[in-house]
Length: 221
Image 1: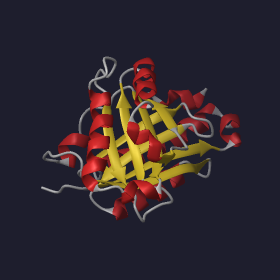
Image 2: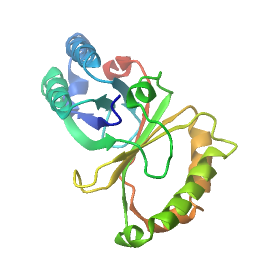
Image 3: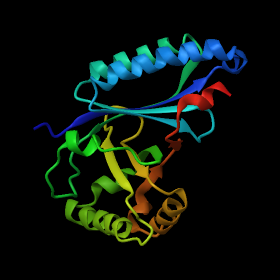
């Protein structure tokens, strides 16, 4: 059983010319995009797609794989499928592996293959240098307060959390990913977590990507 998976969160921005293309041409391009998605869906642990609610992008992919080569191939293939009408807006690469603060068995294959929830949120995160100079036991207590505040919040009705790691892989240290059934409930949970002591050491949490499960027909309007 492997205990790690490679992840990419890829937000795409459609060229302004896209919206002026005839509908029949856009349908043809989206058909090629779907073919690419199906091909990689068989290679990846999971591949999920969302309509973007974030400024600057129209489409968000969240892919998990057992190797980096398939992620590289996917990025190139999906951009090629759009025939020059899409560009990379945000790309967040990370590794999903057990948290040092959570003592539990971990199988990314089973965790990531569940059916997606309606909404998706992802952002890169970085902590200050001072955080890593705190003894581990103290950091563990601080993080457990944060985790328990989230788990026990009355509006946390099925929110799924994935903390992934990017030390030495990007200009951030984590990519934090959530699957969410309700955005209003999510906002209340996040607001409460602003009171957690762990917030003191967070220095980066942007760009924030928000997506919704939606048939790609919205790209034809």
